[in-house]
Image (cartoon, rainbow, N blue to C red; front, side, top):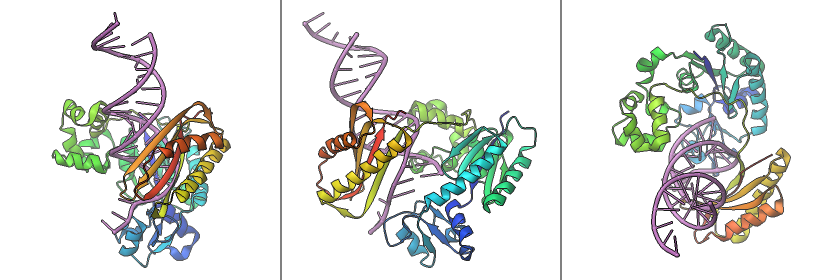
Length: 341
DNA sequence: TCTGGGGTCCTATAGCCT
DNA sequence: TCTGAGGCTATAGGACCC
């Protein structure tokens, strides 16, 4: 039987800001965008005090401002959060080398080979993270990643939750399907439409029916996930598949000069990034989101992988030419994929 | 009215080749 | 020569994650 931990930092960005500015402790803090709630941007993290006003991640900053004008709005400081993240990840590595980092503030840890009881390991991890960073986290303990992630969410903040196979019917089946990794807003609405709201209700549907609704891959996944089945291994090392930059204009624009100049800036960033990390890519994709929020992409694949500014720029403008720029543009982006070292 | 930025993976379609 | 089945690659869009 595997023993997997999921470690999830509590309100990570906001907690770091409160840690370095103690006068913010106990206050509603909203981290997102450039910290100006009258500008375009969304909430990255809201402190628990801010969440009481209904503010949550991915909410437009302007909406958050309306809900709580007195909240402290701060810009995202990725450099600082990455430093804290490195301390946390290296702390976790002391416990087990089998670690999968999930973004900046989460990780899975495989402790199957350790003799110490998992709840003792979890408590010790929480102590060590508190000592080194002053921050709290929530930890889920389960036989697989799927259940460990659900578990870590069950007693937030600062909790430890153990889920075993025996708990699936009693403690998992009553939860909303939304708690399953891979079930987002669209799938939730679709499932509601066929009368399925909880994980238990999902588990009552046959494999064939689910495949009929969601296709082979996703259907089979949902069938297993609703039963708490997940054999997926921890990914301890992975290579990037693509790198991209995009920007949303403060106001929608129809000036081609501004659009193409922004694109050139993004292309330079992406080319610098490729060179710095030692990758070359073959496919260049330009993305445009119009004022009606409809998003389109155009792609060009070149013969040989490249990190050359000139080649990427050429391919990107081949793509840009193929757009009809009749509506105002909200966002422009560039991606290079098909990466190799 | 509002809806970021950086990613991954999946699906459908179309063209080309055998 | 015609037709079709598969495989492969490129492309476009969409859902989802943090």
